[in-house]
Image (cartoon, rainbow, N blue to C red):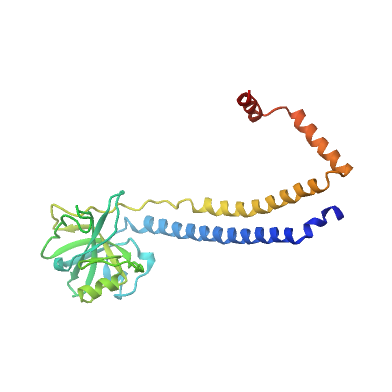
Length: 278
């Protein structure tokens, strides 16, 4: 055991502490990826279950203005009412297929007098980049629309927007702007409207049914944590050989290792190195 006493030194305890801290970090990062994978799988399940379902009445899905069950995300609902075109808002910083642009929010007043925000789609940024060159006008009069519900977005600290625009689809902020009894739990992503108009903003496509690579990343972090301990063990072994290289038993083991390499013959990498060195 005296030959291994060096591992009890302060230096090696320091190395062990670093490896343990790294491994703990890997565990947390792995769990984070597992959690993200769970969230992604739940979102895929919601899209698969709700996207093509039959339209429902809004009151059956949202009984209160400020409450929304995330399991109802993407469910189509049928609405009748009128667009409040004068209250239209643009959402800044919304790229689409790599192009800068805006989402077009138009409050939709229901026959009950309540208002739900409808996202009519995306428009390209204009020459000034601060606003679109043109925004398609919504149809007027009594309209029947089908929208897919999405929850309100959070605010983003430090982001602001000029008049007529918002930084995110934070529905309480939108409700303060339009000053009407507005649904703040969810808004509607436009699927269809009747009567329709010739020019409409670009509709967003159905989300991909893809969980992403979170599971693979989670296992990679686990592997990194394990490899840290393997690397520590390798370093301990290398120092042991260096410290005890004069020991007869260790010299015999080193001789056997060299003989094993010679018996194996040159590897492809050795042959390539020899060619390059010639």
